[in-house]
Length: 233
Ligand SMILES: C[S@@+](CC[C@H](N)C(=O)[O-])C[C@H]1O[C@@H](n2cnc3c(N)ncnc32)[C@H](O)[C@@H]1O
Image (cartoon, rainbow, N blue to C red; front, side, top):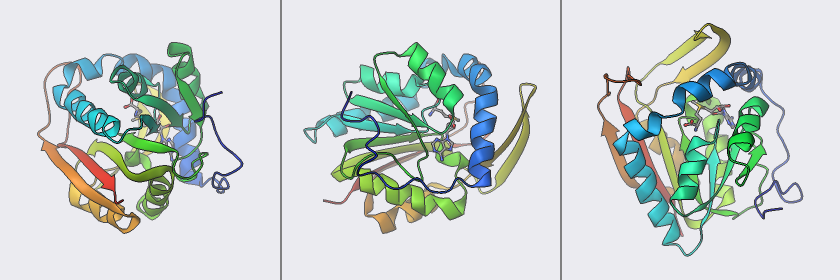
């Protein structure tokens, strides 16, 4: 057992699951296989994504620790990329079907079931945290809880890397590739997310906005945002 398998003795008590969270979990359970097949090679086409994760991993390692948590890991492709960059990652997701795929594809990595609003880990467990296109499903009213949890499980000086589509609206989606889903996609600005992070002790390190890549296998409809913050010492 890794030190980052769920630590129920000191972790936060699981919160009552909201109906929105339940709908998100059920939706990702339904599209887990389709999503996994579709996204498999995406990172190879996104140099900025790889660069952001590379810089993040280098900064995590410079803290002298390597334990890193990906919240909302889905099929585990980013967790596996982080492992290749030299940190020791654990992936956490709401969806059991996603985690089954992740553990099947990456049997040597650690994965845990849970929500980013109620993390099953002890305080100060990690030096790095990644939320890669996962806060997009967290409603505004739960964002503060998720960021309080992020600050709780990170050591002082730890790094938190986020990526998300930029915008100022919520898209409700009911069909993905022919599969019925019930998903909200929250588009936010870098400033908005930073404003939600700052009360929890996070200070900005890097703010990057990228124009949509409209070509190729993974055309993007919106600008993309990358935010790297550090938990104050
Ligand atoms: C768009 S996918 C991104 C998955 C992965 N990070 C990637 O880039 O391939 C969003 C993932 O976030 C997960 N998720 C959504 N809300 C969550 C929450 N509150 N806690 C944990 N995971 C969540 C979903 O189950 C889904 O697997």
